[in-house]
Image (cartoon, rainbow, N blue to C red; front, side, top):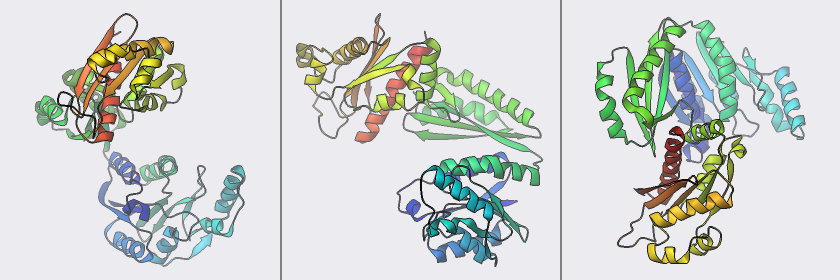
Length: 413
């Protein structure tokens, strides 16, 4: 079976949003052993949509679309799927009932444009959207399967997991089950990861591997297949165990885990509280920590001490220390961490001070120089980093390295 994904939306082509939907769907198809041959991103232009749909129907057996199911004039997906298949659009009462329920829930009046969402191509198996107003569908015609889902990522993901995947598993029971596992690594560059695991990867015949780089985050994807779910899981776990022996504590998590989630779980398990003092990151570290639901159990607060006077007045950093060593220094980072721990009544204080650029550098202190510290009341750990990239990337790298320093500390106590 040949599959194809069509992401619909002019906002994707204008760079206003990133198309994460196709990536999610592709991974799910791989797990089902379905061959994905094409991914298209097209605008809401009627001619583009119609020609893309006709081409997809010629070359693919399974077509999955996302986007274009809303109430506005440029939401034309169902209209042109019907035209491409020579079908009528018909009203589905279930879609209207759900639409009224959702609009009532959010205190919005039903308008004529909303009713557009209740019309789908005839013969469609409608999927009522419990998470939004746009219904999804699965349509079989002339040995082709056309499936349409909303473009809103959280709606699309839930509807695909709850409806499309069970449908495809039942219709096309795979002879082999294919699955992937992703290990997340920090503290090593892409080339270093490759060097460390290259011999292991080259010796494997039942696995395929991919190494992907993000700022301060390298991902190693392991893929294998077997006749049963149990065998696949056993094989994946065996490979994970081998890679863990090689990479050790550089691995911070797997699959959807984030480093801030891992740190949060460690804090909860150890019943510790943290506070932060930030200069060049401007609150980014605190934002990352509080991104996790339930972080109020372990995050006390923070001080964004961007100015020397704030470091002096709120964090009690002596002016003579700033004059002698400079705001961007190991000594000032140490004092910031120690004082924020005290003033926020936390077990641990973390600080970051640096030069994010493009200005602020001196002959001795270049753009990207960052000092960070961690204080627990008994000892203070400091680190120096010379980071690279533009301003935003330096800030992100600094915050993530501080989190990794924290992770390593928590793992060791």
